[in-house]
Length: 403
View 1 (cartoon, rainbow, N blue to C red):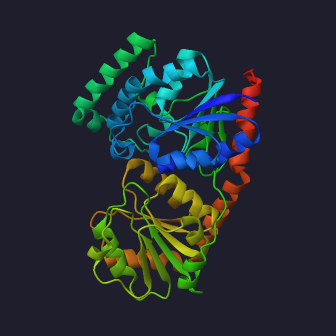
View 2 (view 1 turned 60 degrees about the vertical axis):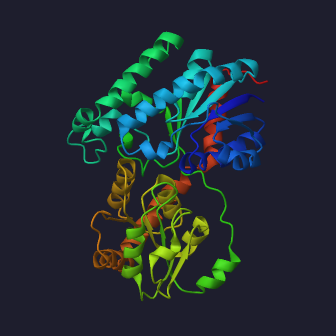
């Protein structure tokens, strides 16, 4: 048995895929100390891991800066500078045998380097490679980088200052901004399939595409009674970019009177009373059990978060994707290119256009068939069990001692 430290962002999209992995690691005899935000304590402790909060707590929500790569890089480097003193003291007092860190948790990567520990990278989105973003690449996510550089000189100054500090104090050199956003290791666990990964040929054998790490579907008898036997359209914008009153109102107008029941999850911050009249075929909730609703759904209207898209494909449900940030646009492009759905822009979206696209997906069985085919590749990749097998094999091959 070995002891490991797991470093993650306090964000649902990053924490949720790791929970089945941590549960299985512990079942197989590993001891896990998991660093994240206090709001995830209960979920993490249910896996059997020991929870530890960051000190100081993360002052900024990573989701709020994720739309701009330079802002995100500055935030991650400054956060690393803030967290490393307490993390290193903690790890020196309570040693671990190896580290697993999220792909956008450079402080975990740096702590492993400083303490000379083996590290594994956990990637909750697609694997990223600078070659993906060269001019002319069809799936270019950072096409606007030159303009971004000019607009964001304050972020560049923050990045330069933080890199100098990390180098002078710890001897850690973040050679490229791109490295701060990926934190590649000797083993990189990616929660998708090679078939769904953009330009999978760019990634060598250190990248293991294990498919989504998803738990079981818990039944919801009360919601099931409300839905009856009707086919379902599910609308959810996820946990970060979900305050979109105009968009929800557009959905209500677009889907009014459709034969499907519509389940619309609007998030905790949305005032449902401000939505206006709610059609008889629509159920509006602040939260809905997503895996269960998708098990009943014929169509999913989503922002294109990686976890949501993976869960939709696993259920064989086609999508209309309305992305907000570049990462979601990359995922949306894969949905479209795989034939599993369509992309819409939220800006200026009209109810009649949304209705047209929804009807198009629902009336063409090829969208569902493509979603089912891609979902089959995600299931075949192995899931959290495969992730744990790869981690344990890597630990043994690297001669990480067992406690």
